[in-house]
Image 1 (tube, rainbow, N blue to C red):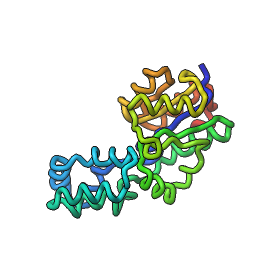
Image 2: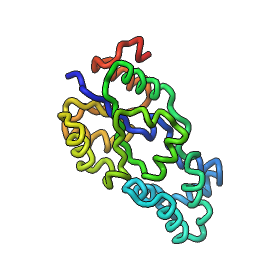
Image 3: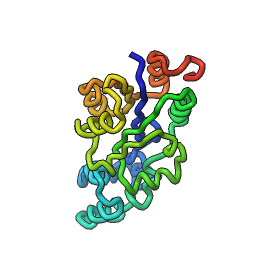
Length: 206
C-alpha cells in the first residue's frame, strides 16, 4: 500500500546523536564510562524530552552529583556538540519527498528548549509539514499514546503512514499500531524503502 505521508525521526536519522562520542573526546573514554555508570544521563534527557525545562533539569541533576557537576552541565552548555552533524543524505531524501508533494512529518523525542536550539543550527527542521515534538506533547516514544496522537492530529489511518526511526523499540511500537515502519540503519536502506513504497523514483533516491 502506497503511504499517504512519511514520518521521520530526527536523532540518528537526520542528525547524529551521540553523547558518548562527545564525552569520549572531552574527558576520555575511561572517565566517560565512569560518568555514565554513576549518572543515568539518558534518563535525565528523557525528562527533558517529556517537557522538563532544558537547563533546569540538567543543572538540577548536576547539583545532585557534585563530583560530576561540570561534566553534567556540558549536556546543556554544549548540547549542539552532542547532536551533530546532520546526515545530509537523509536531508536530501526529506527534500525529495517534499518536492514530489508527499506530506512529511517529524515524530521525535526532543525537548522544548533543545529543539529550539537545534532549529537555529539546522534549517531543515523547519521544512516539515508538521513536527510532533515530544516535549510539547508531554509523552515520548515508544509509548503508544504518542503514535495515537499523531494519527488523530493528522487524520491519517495507521496503515497510510510510513515511519523511519533508528531505535527498534520505537519501530516496533509503530508497527504494532499498523504503521508501515522502517528501522533506519543508513540512508541507503531508507532510500530503497521509499522507492519500494512508490514515493520516489530510483534517480531521485540515488
